[in-house]
Amino acid sequence: MSERAKPGTITWTDLTVENAEEVRDFYAAVVGWKPEAVPMGEYEDYSMNESHSGRAAAGICHARGMNTGLPPQWLLYITVADIEESLRKCGAHGGKALTEIRSLGGSGRFCVVRDPAGAVCALFEPA
Image (cartoon, rainbow, N blue to C red; front, top):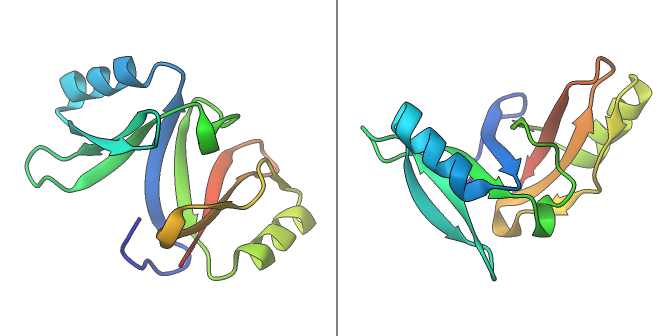
């Protein structure tokens, strides 16, 4: 998520699960992604990289730390220009914030929301 994306674009996709190593190995075997450890302090999450280019394709994350409470599903991060304004509009249009706004260090901030149909995504505001 380090490149500055335009509002409305899908910036990143990750999966938060209890058994990150098993799921990492599953996707490495099934789709050919090459895992790269991402230090998270006391543990590591994983960037899953395309085998042909080495570019990051997705993340596989442990359901702990800042990912505690996230649903075990592929989570799309959609870039927005102003996360507070997008959260206000989310509520006004029948959606709900599932997390507080969380920092992604120097990359920006995000918040997980549920739309009126129950689908979940993350809103991402780049730094």
